Amino acid sequence: MLEWAVAAGKVAFSLFVLLNFVMVLTWAERKQSALMQDRIGANRASILGFTLLGLFHPIADAIKMVTKEDFVPQGASRALHTLAPFIALFFALISFAVIPLGDELAVGGCTISLQVIDLNVGILYVFAAMSLGVYGFVLAGWASGNNFSLLGALRASSQMISYEITIGATVVGLIMVFGTASLQTLVRRQGDLLLGFLPGWGVFYQPLGFLLFTTAAMAETKRAPFDLPEGESEIIGYFTEYSGIKFGMFLMTDFTETVVMAGLVVTLFFGGWQFPYLQPDGFHFPGAAVVSISPLAVSIAQVMTFLVKLAVFCWLFLLVRWTFPRFRYDQLMRLGWQMMLPLSILNVLVTGALLLLLHR
Image (tube, rainbow, N blue to C red; front, side, top):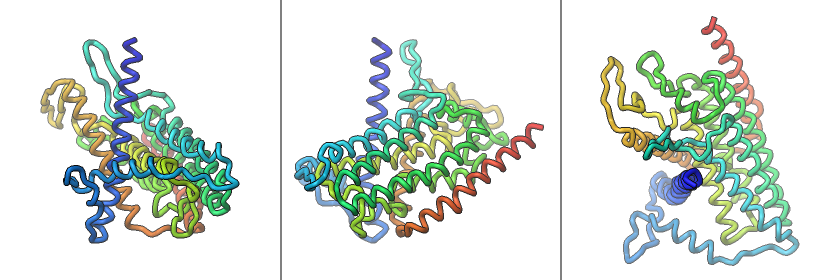
């Protein structure tokens, strides 16, 4: 019974973090784009006259989408048209399950891992879940009975397949360095110091891999400058024939994927919940200086460290989204297949050669 309660608590906490980040991102995107374009941004929705810098807008958006008409076009497959957004959102949500928010928390003699599920192939699990999510986008375009929607769905599938190969190849270098595909174990191994004073984060071992992975991760989220599957200005998008809450679910999927990909970047390349020099019993600074703190304080510091890093990379993704214009489709494919994929393979070869030289 206790195990079920702990598991339910971890799922609830993980969803709480993920869904709140998604909600805040819908507000942050408006405010950040407004600041970059010298505008005010969201500031109208209020409760009892208080606007709180527009923070009530996500609530207003949710109410609007729930109450709008659910339109299904004539000739569409009603069942698949309804199912598609659920598939897309479901696989985006479960992808977050293997991302560790912290190490372990000891409560009343019970040790709780601050991760919903720790798989020894956690990286592969995320890739598999995100890959299955593409079925939601393809079904949405096909079931709508609209040629423009189908074109957007084809763009989504080809784009995600193209950049998933680069993502997989860049992660191979990390697995070679740290010797594990478990995200929790990988984060723990990034706690070792590099050269005696630098955090042993993945970005210092795989700088090229970080750049390639981050770029491909942005493409996987299908947001500008990689938003060709949505292409609103071209009237092309897999969700063209969607309205109301089902359109809101596709929008929520985009933001959920943004949070998941930002979480992966943090976990793989920036130490996840690792805070420099923080060990399970306190801070261990270079020079043998030790500052002891309680295990509970350590766990709180780890979770807050992960959340701050996650917020920084979500902000970075929004910054890129409002800075660069949309690629042409041929540019998108050329970037993925002719530039990023060869570089990711080269990164694996160089990593392997260096590991052989260093272990001789």
